[in-house]
Image 1 (cartoon, one colour):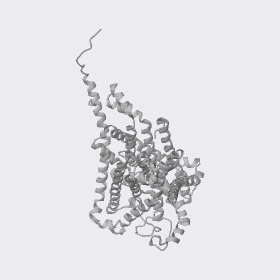
Image 2: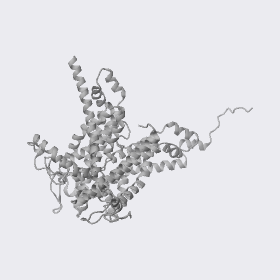
Image 3: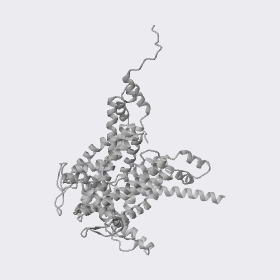
Image 4: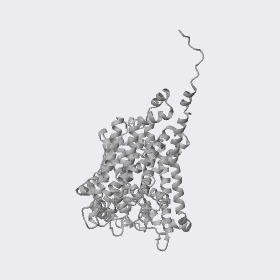
Length: 282
Length: 328
């Protein structure tokens, strides 16, 4: 009997240690990746990096200003397209989504959430690039917006559902029409959560590369015209990392550090918004 | 002093219509939201339509041969996608094999064992793994992971299992192994996040019942909590599998991109997503382009099916919640 109790204790202790160790390994992976990014990228971050455009291969001292600006434009435009549709869809699911259509939309959103981004890329290529006859930043933004909508829709729905029913009833009792209740009371109350969902979605798509390969394409020159091919940081990293030159590799690490920094800032901002408004929500 | 009217006062007509949500502005609001919500299903249909039309020439030309033959020759206009289908499945399978123990470990540790104060920080750090862009994983893989595998992982693996066909050939770096390891790191946070939500959805009474009968903490987890959430956990793994199947950039940068089926994990391979990423802009003939669209269509249909299956399983445990759509 005693031996058996000992064995059970032993198993318990071993497994507790094991799952703890596994968690440590997972966190270690993140620390290693971030550590390498800083170690290999930080030394290249100087004034030139942020303000200059690339110089011809062989020369040193170029920057990636065109890619930083390009990423900003492409992602910003994608957010402009994707946020209203995503939030609207989320509100629909929360307010009217109990029927069959709601089930379908919810299911499609979840399924599209897992669609490979490269497939979205070639879809937008057939939809926009082929008919227009040329690559454009706009097509890239549309591809990223398609990736955003299902994510935002589901987080918006979930957070709008958290709003207490009594608030809605109070507004209706005061004679508010449903649409005003929905927008002024319910959505307003869930605003911090919705904002968090949007920030998370933007953080996710900011680093996407595959959907931009055949839409925004990339551009060695500084370009702010959304009807023309445009460089993005992620495209730049792909090109530089797979290229043969040390100078390119150096720039790739620095660009990756900048991109990762942007994504991290967005992610932490999202946490902060949620915490500051919701208190102990989750 | 006035008398109280005995008959009930008829409510003003407009007020009732407001409450039932039947006035013009409410209908407009509902209509607008419905229109926005309809865009997603329409998008799914448009996806299938566009990809199907573009892939049709290749489907008609090659039929089933496309799936089972291995020759991919743009000059002779012969296309067989078997190597990339094999590579996609093999890399995803290996990735899941590596990632599942880690992810389940994280999820179980965070929900059942960890002290309260480390829960949020560890969950946040693991979920940050999901925020790292694919292309950054690729960069890290090329310059850090591959040298690491070459020096520290491949030699001992060879020493132990070198006699099997799975480790034959020369290791140049870009290989099925490198692609699978990077995929494993990438899908780990997804599986961990969804598993965690599934375990959190298991009622506390399950644990309490097991502990009340004298089970150790681990026995409670293994005999009560995990079986209760089994469908959801399987769903989480399948969800991770779905991610791995369609992951593009990091794999493209690490897997070696060779149209060949090799049992050895040390040899270069190819995946469907990588083939599209690499060859789409070089596809000069219509049939070549169409063949790549067929690859995209297969990838899309497979991932949709895999995701649908995963969602249904997860919904059985955590009903209707947007599990995993918020892995950050």
